[in-house]
Image 1 (cartoon, rainbow, N blue to C red):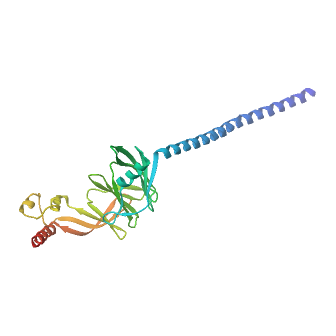
Image 2: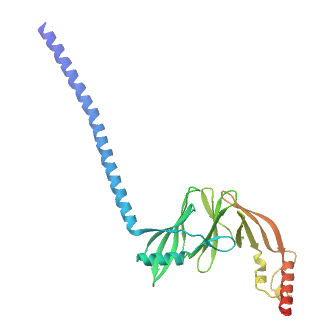
Image 3: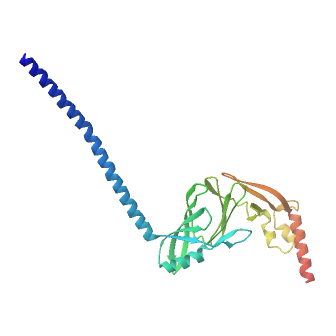
Length: 268
């Protein structure tokens, strides 16, 4: 009787002990997990703090507060002039600068280099909060940028200048793209963009003073009926642009224009 009761007691005691062991085994990993999470949280905050301190030491932000008129209805950013003065004031050699324009959603991360007291600038990133766009790019020796936002898609068009050339870039949708060589010039009027495309075959007529026989013979397949330039509205869609020609200026019209110019010069 007593042996039977003792056996039952020990059995219950062993079951309770095993139960406690199982609980402990389950609890320890959870505790370790919480400890690791706490450690990682503190470590990440520490890293973020140090990263911010490093950025604050070597990273500058310049905000252009005024709007300046550029060409063809665009606004102007004179990076070379504005940032050179800003960086000389901060006495920095090589660094990075975020260039912002007041009341505009797009801005640039620029890499800065200095040679012989002259600064050069490279676009490293273009960011546009309205278009949810954050793009890394490489555009060296940029010295000024013209910009405008308009049309029904609220596209932003940038004209990026280097010492020897310029290129057009459109920000629309959640991306950006460069415009092709078929676009010679873009203007902005009443909220819309307009393009001008010259026929490269007749590029020499830009500087010609007449359309005499020698000029015509210098152009292979010269035809008066071909277009000299086209003009019209340009729409910037998600990943391409659409040209809507509204005027075609022919080679013949250009030749007649040169004749009229020569008459005017003679009269003067």
